Image 1: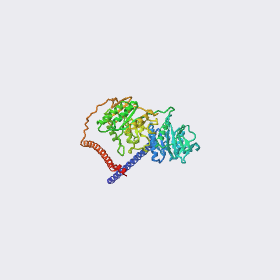
Image 2: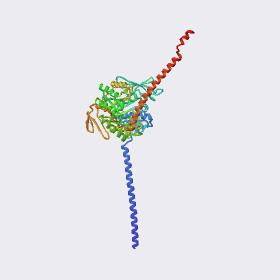
Image 3: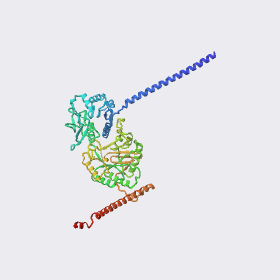
Image 4: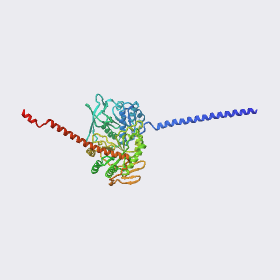
Length: 553
């Protein structure tokens, strides 16, 4: 009996243990399902809250499978809209069709491959007040065929791919140029305003036309500066929400990428000219990391201080990137050194100058985030480029004051648009006469000049904080002045060169002496050669007895 009870007790314990294990397993399984379900629902919620194309002021749509040239044109459009302080979203036609309902302004650039849903979304959007800016002919032709009769426009394609454009940027003058397109579409009715003229063979049409909701630009080659400048002006007008005139932006004269070792007399001559004529200007200086106390650097900074105290402003060019990718941490480290070297000489850069493509690169955006004022320049930088995957101009969030390169339409380089701040870059290596002519061209331009000291600026580095506000300049919360005070320079500066540097300098001096000796010897050699030839010619061809021989005959 006792054995039976003991056995029964063991069985009950075994059954209880097995049941406990099963219950624990079921509990774990249910918990995992709940957590997995929460994760799935969370991912779906995030996807709903964070669409592929984020919300912005303007949506730019381009073709599915767009070519490199078309994507480059889209980057130009995003760049221009960024200068005009718009948050830009962009995507292919398929991507944009899903997000179009959330936008009030849409630019359709040369869209020829798209889903049918895009036309439906555009039509629905137009009924709710959507404003559409068509560039090119393909999409708007299909759209108008769906909305109205085909007789409302004419489409020129046969053997007519080149047109002559005439467009007036101001009331006093107009610009002309040739454009190439696969076809030219012109509305024949339904448009309230037309600007510019396009001549295609015997046909004449407009450059851009618009009504209350639709704008149409017949040309779209953004690699053509005339087309790019026209777009910059017209898109600003299209986006302007008021009936009054648009805000007028200025242009800046910029002596571009000046090095400390370049001719100081030439720099001082140009600065003196600008100071004498009381014109504001900017000097873009290259970063200096070592030997900031050398006489050449001190002389250079003295001229910069003189310019700074007389209406000129200084901006610092970003370090030249030599790596396959931008490294914001490394660039910021070198920027800190360069800024410190200039500010110790009482030269205060109030902006940064970078290649255009840095505004599309996350590392470049990180560098720019330290500066309120950004000048961009058309420089090739293989480490950065426009990214289709971003779908927005992320740099907009930092609220920079942008100064873009002027879109040059002639050899003077002056700006023909005043819809955003522009920089007229003058190459300091050009002849002084050429530089003076370009300065005079800026003075004669209908786009006004402006001083960079008329607006507020700020930047911070790893060691310093500069703030310019309401005409007061502070560095690390200490007020500093721009007043110019001449400095005395050491006549016998001790360079503290090591053996290798002394050998290099002595070798350079010996090379100069050797060049002089070679030139002198070469001149003497040519002289003696000429003398020998002359004497030989006189001796053998002009003998003294030849006249007598002729008389005897």
